[in-house]
Amino acid sequence: MSQIIALYDACVLYPAPLRDLLMQLAVTDLFRAKWSNQIHDEWIRNLLKNRPDLTREKLIKVRDLMNENVRDCLVEKFKNISTTLKLPDKDDHHVLAAAIKCSASVIVTFNLKDFPKSILQKYDIEPQHPDDFIIALFESRPAVICACAKTCRQRLKNPTFDVERYLAVLEKQSLPKLVSRLRDYAEII
Image 1 (cartoon, rainbow, N blue to C red):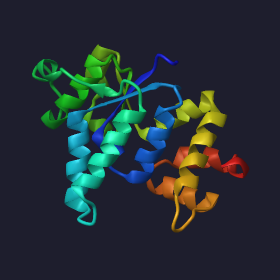
Image 2 (cartoon, rainbow, N blue to C red; image 1 turned 135 degrees about the vertical axis):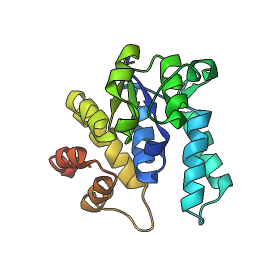
Image 3 (tube, one colour; image 1 turned 120 degrees about the vertical axis):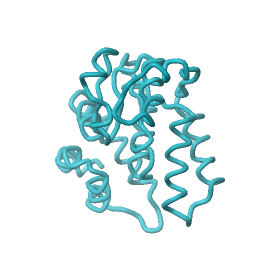
Image 4 (cartoon, one colour; image 1 turned 30 degrees about the horizontal axis):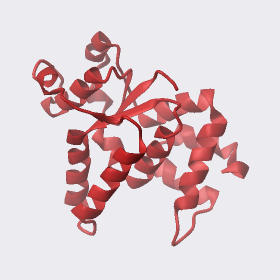
């Protein structure tokens, strides 16, 4: 198993298509995926606020499936670290504290400005946009990433998604580099 430990920020768990791909990647052992209950609470709270068609019970089931299927994913007991941190947004202290606690090398987030490299480098942590994170994995193991994308695409039912439609979904998730690379492998996705 890889020594890369990646902490997922709530913002990358919020959109279902991206969350699905990140979870599928997490079970490959290309890296170790981590998050905390506080991160879960944040994405669930924001999703419920913006999607009244969803229920808390359904999202709790998703959370529980995530926790059950990704080995050793939950980071706990980091509150004391959180109080010592300085970030542009104090609401992100818990994310950095969890990353420090689990010895993450990467925080996967859309909010790069909230995790300045100058601060994170003190902890040997790099903030990475999900597109850059997945592309780095793709560079070393393209077949694995393609298989994950295929699995996620095939899970989509009512309606089913052909490759181009699925790639359009990924593009809407702000993954243009990944989509560009996956197009070269469309016949196996």
